Length: 287
Image (cartoon, rainbow, N blue to C red; front, side):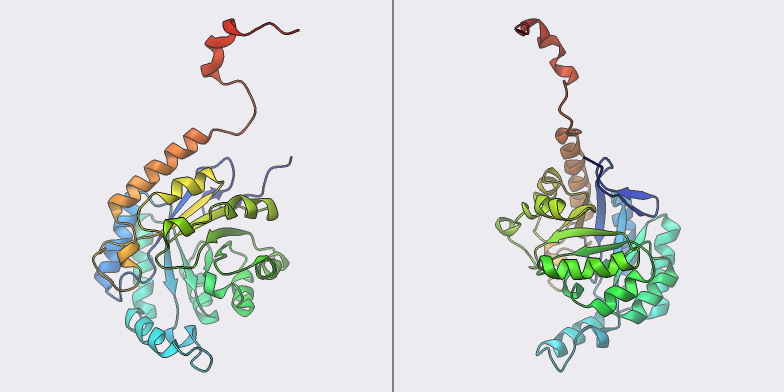
């Protein structure tokens, strides 16, 4: 069997045979607080995240008031949490000076252009936007890798999005996701990970919305090449995703568990293992 495709994000290789890529999703857990966002960037990088993921958007463009009855409330929240373009550029510069690898979820075409100019290593296509092919085309046209969450999307919708990416020669990573915030562990449906691996020749990962760090190692055992987890430095805040996000100490614990799981899973080849050698004397001779 030929090896599965890898995806290169900066100096990281995502795929089988490579360490699982750890993504800290900072999102809007900062709630518009510039100092808190800087603290999150520093803490996530220091805790060992391979990639930091931001959100880049224009609040007024994220929801359609004409078709979404909740749009007004969503836009109000997101407007309060939105940084100016100048402020966001400062945050990217701060992250880069720390040596952090950064990419983002842009939610409109202008934000794709802006994030591309800031040096986003890849783009994240949020689960809510998988059917937004206009946005997918804008991302894919840049030629950078796209990491996308398949939450709520069936096979036909996934294939429409990946077809656009393939037309542009754009590599992609699919993350198994259940779009519930927070998610109960019993609803994780991790068998979708090997199902996605069977259907798509690309790295498959998992974006986990459960509380704590129990699920990511299980996702790795199921075949995930990337783990994304929402991150915070203020877990007592109830707004946005803070209350179910992991802290810096949780992130360290999760990385430790993921690396142990990788060791436990081994390489997958059907071979004799060195620790079996001393048992050869007890083996019956071949007929």
